[in-house]
Image (cartoon, rainbow, N blue to C red):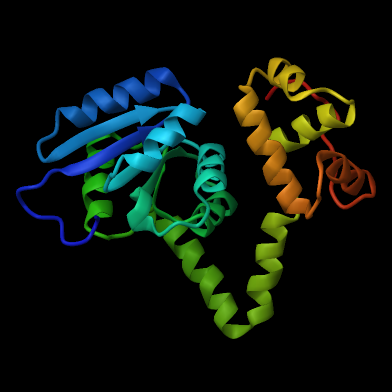
Length: 234
């Protein structure tokens, strides 16, 4: 689907963004460009992911690392041609987050201060099969891979450090799980959908190799990971 895009065929784009204002603005701006076609848009919901599974696209625009993780939970490690090449935008200049995104299969990583013109050019470059990222973060990737070429244990140690801790949202959520709250109660407390809460718990269980949410809580209490002390929303 993504290979050898013909000159006569427009680049198909799907916009996946949590913030409605951001989502609608991106769709509106992308639609103004020639040779680019928006084939769909949505946020983190079951209906959106069901639509994505049946909507071919060349480039998938995602506006957060958490959304990317949820997407990967739903779609696993499918070939990029099956769901479109992923372009992550609106990001901080954070080397750790960048490497996590690379590990999750993105082809592009744009910072939050880019212009719409830069987004459009990144879409075109991504559709051509090119990688897109800020020069300094590109150097981070070179350093990361280079260390692994010198010492294979170097990559293992760094990769382990990125996987060894839960995200702030996951710690908040598991704190509420430890209190015995249901998914519905947690969703209300953290202003999330039940679908999102279920996906977060599933990721934590996989992360800890736990067979149930209760086993995950016990693993955390055993000292492998730390819970968020303040369970308020982020």
